[in-house]
Amino acid sequence: MYLLVNIDHVATLRNARGEGYPSPVVAAQICEKAGASGIVFHLRGDRRHIRDEDVVALKESVSGKLDFEMAASDEMLSFLKEIDPHLCTLVPEGREELTTEGGLNMNVVFDDFKERVFPSIRETDIEISLFLDPNPEDINLAFELGTDAIELHTGNYANAPSSGEADHELERLKKAAEQAHELGIKVNAGHGLNQKNLPKFIATVPHLNEISIGHALISDAVFDGLETTVTNYLGIIRA
Image 1 (tube, one colour):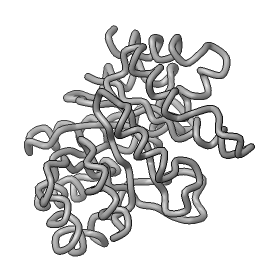
Image 2 (cartoon, rainbow, N blue to C red):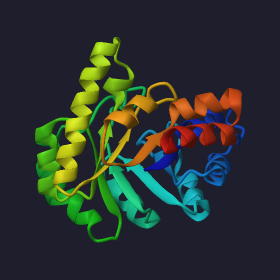
Image 3 (cartoon, helix red, strand yellow):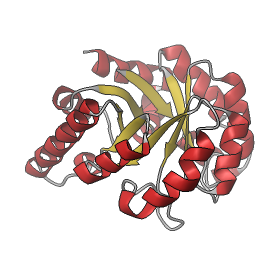
Image 4 (cartoon, rainbow, N blue to C red):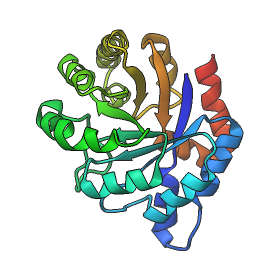
């Protein structure tokens, strides 16, 4: 199981003042030095945090896995192929949302992904992951498309208002991971995971390949330092 760190909110902090720091690239270097296996970024259409020049610099500096999160627009597909990261994670994107609010609606995007998006990315060696809620039908459609991986949306588990609802979401995530694994799809996960809810998640959900953590990790780093925080998360994963 590998930890990938999402450094979007380092860019958010930089953009708040527009003075060029803190640097997402420096943050990525610290994360890798501390043992993270790779870096995640989401280049949004409105460029609210990560920007094009950040992506170019990350491609040049990241030595581990680079995961390019994006909506499946023609603009992003073109830039994706120019950057040539290891992994592309396709996510839904709403202009008014504060953060990604759920997984892809596979019934809605299936035909477009089959006819336009997947053929375009398959011209490269970039692996494809789909950001999905733990719904059996969505996973089956992802399999039909031939995706390499899925990233299970863990936000409903992380934000559950009660332990009972959290356990219900964990059971859904467990079954989704088992289904994807049986279909030969790699299982990644992310959204809302933190040091408190991560241990139970890891103990319950099988076949996890990569876990992406961003907002909580960067928030913890404000108090504990980035290198220490990455080390703490790795300790949870390795335990």
